[in-house]
Amino acid sequence: MKKWSVLLVLALLAGTVLACSTAGTAVDRTIEEARKEVGAGTRTPTLEPEPTQPPEPSPSSIPTSEPSPTAAVIAATATPVPEPTEAVLPTYTPVPPEAEQPAEEMTQGVRVLDGDTIAVSMNGQEYKVRYIGINTPETDQPGGYEATAANRALVEGQQLRMVKDVSEVDQYGRLLRYVYVGGIFVNAELVRQGYAEAATYPPDVAHAEEFVTLQGQAREAGVGLWAVEASPTEPPPPEPGGAAYIGNANTKKFHYAWCDSVGDMNPENQVPFATREEAIAAGYVPCKRCNP
Image (tube, rainbow, N blue to C red; front, side):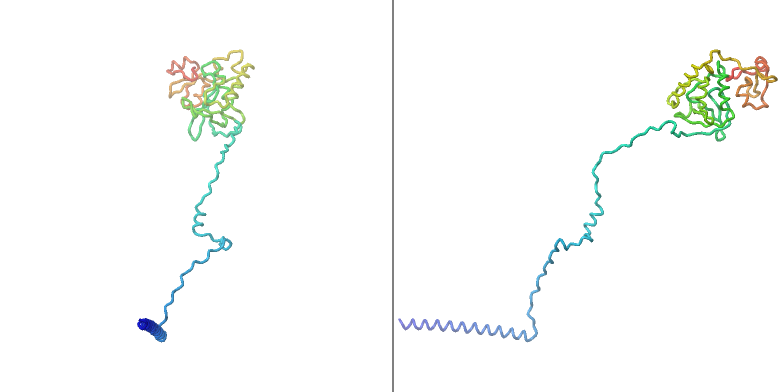
């Protein structure tokens, strides 16, 4: 039994030695093959190092003069929105009437129609003009002749400056105007002299209070139509050698010699009459304006 144990141990030792020898031979063969590859110029491949991220710059190293494209776009398109503030309305300062500059018209070629109406020539055309804010008697009414004469004394042969209020014309198509001759306000002057009354027709009321005041002063002073004695209803007698009535051969109407229509009449068409009856007998009819 002892003999077999020794033999088993010897066998195990022999196996171990054989295994070590075989391993050593394999190692020697691997080394020898590696030497041959090196000698033949074959390079052993090496691994490329992985790229690394550059370090992030510190706050002090970030450039400030050249913003990034995104920042530039934002800067170009962004519009600051101001905070809402309370609106401040402008203060209105009334302009005094004397400082206003209304549209003016300069006219010539005046023809007086009655106490508050004239005819003017502008741009080669004749216009009838009714004074704003006043009223005078018609030519066939008491005081009408005197009012017409007062108007004629102020404007006939003068250059006029006319100013509109609000309305352009009245219901008869006459221009509505304030009329000035130099520094004289004709509308107001007729009221001041007592030949016109204040007549207010809105919306043309720029001088209404002034006219009312002047009328009160004229009435208190008893001037013009406010005189104690009634004004004559008949015109004064014609000048020596002159006709009392003038007929128009074209229209077959006859007029007082002082009627404005006579001044517009062609001298070749004028037919003188000494009496009213003479004119009627000749087939003429009375003028409706001067009512002879």
